[in-house]
Image (cartoon, rainbow, N blue to C red):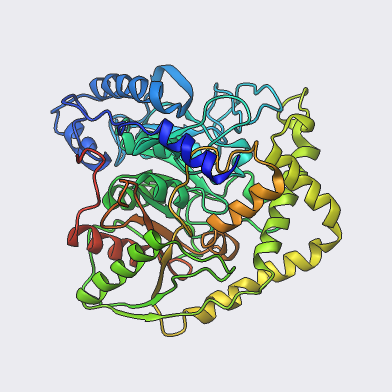
Length: 479
């Protein structure tokens, strides 16, 4: 598909925004506010679950974000937990007992999980009510939630555009107001990318802050972290505080509940263009530089910074991604006896074929990726956090990153888009996507990203609270 064809398709598909905010038990409350209303007895958890399910059905009819609906919502600890009674969804690459885990793939028929994944148990410990599972692209490889067969997940800000990936289903539901928070995980940007595309808060925690991901801990370099996408900073902060009560990593500083900005003024490094050579588009560049000016107005010091990672980082990360696809193809029968790697989509097959052709480079790739932490640490000398784009350009029209696009073209497009997020996955550091203060001229959100040292979630959240208080995030309900 040519660029002009994509633009034409995007114009044809462009529709009014999709949101399901209404005068019901959820109102316009975030998760913290909704949990408080339930505790006060103003609404019941059952009423909230009923009204959320109605919102989900309405939103999903137009966004195609849901993989599995639970006929009977799974209530958990409704009498306790920071998010007691708050409705949510689990991403469909994470086991929820009794529900199939499909990983977004047509290569096998998923069977019901026998038990909850470790992160599912951590999520449930916060008291949430699970309504089902959300869609993701095949095995979470793509930065858009699109498929060779079947409808894509649509962006509620503009249904002709991508909702991001791989946690696109979760982000679409939260942005549309169907639920206040939803599970997301991130192996190369998959929390932060859909958060940026859908105007949400998306915090990728430090490696080990939440319980180890079952897939990630089997890898030579664990790049996967679990968390949530939310509409407010306080929801992301409250989730991490509640999750820490279930699992406290003694190797990291205790986080606790972050409730607002700090008095301390920060030294902030500014990184506008990606180290991989991808140039940031005008709308994204403007959003980042405007954020930098706001931070200076708030008393922070902002100076340009260089992230001097190995020039081979992008190629190495792509090789590592190919290794993951190769391993899935080799072990897929553990997901289902009929697993057929030939039915994996074009992106997965292309990644696998590229790795098979270059497998002998693996030791050098792993060695160089592990050394990335040295360049990352060097960039933080004299800095507290680094401000950058989340993505090199704004969310594209549906079809631009479809797995049906020829592999060589698709990879070129992905690398020109996902140019900032993977470094944090390799190094294991925390990073948060926040909505910029204004949308693009055509009404799409833009994400800005703050990255920190290992264990620095408190600093990132305090800064996020300050920006949110300085100027409210754009709302999907605005005309």
